[in-house]
Length: 95
Length: 95
DNA sequence: CATGAACATTCACATATTCGAATGTATGGA
DNA sequence: TCCATACATTCGAATATGTGAATGTTCATG
Image (cartoon, rainbow over all chains, first blue to last red; front, side, top):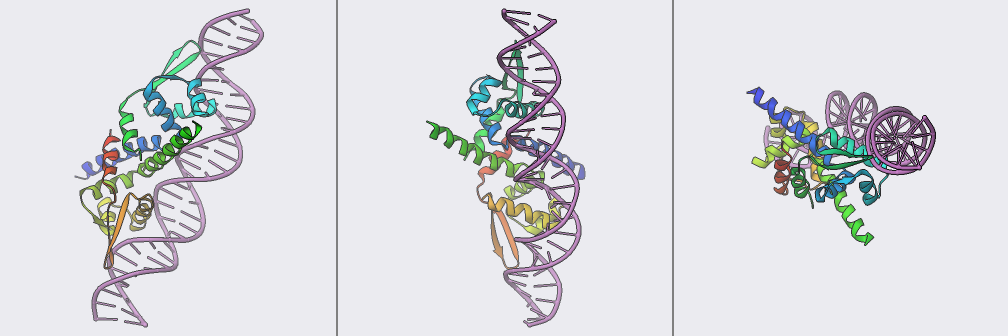
């Protein structure tokens, strides 16, 4: 009974964390770009016009949440969407 | 050119604000309940087990964002979803 | 108009988030 | 092994957010 409610509450909490992760314009722009194709950090920084450190910080957040995946190529690191379903979430929340 | 980019950025910002509004477990639970049928504040407070003031605060946030609509009936106020599409957003962000 | 019920708002505080600046780390090449 | 490049992390400050406690407001009723 209450267990069901508690289970629901945990789901709402998880859901809220995902929404929180999407609740930043820079991260949304990065996800938009990664939705088209994988990108290196430098490219994300240049395309968005943001500092590299800031991009790395946002990437770290999204990595921890499992939204994004990193793959090293020599000295560069290529990021891609870990689960393209986030694009659905982005699409639905648009305008 | 840059105007297009700027326009996109504004959209990302709006989108981020919506996500931010959804980024709270209590609000998600309230939206879930309102998705089934309109509810009075007291009912929302009792069903979620949260204090009335807290519920009103969250309702105020969602009212400002235009997610929720209020309709007074005597001394009670009934809330409903202003745009049922938010349910889609909620559904997509669920695990 | 006094009262109680239902709801809203304000204030204060704790916590979280974002960002710039600075610094650290890993990799490939000279 | 030294250096430059690409990226990550840490730190501190500013700002935002969530919450409880207290207080205000609105309305129906007597």
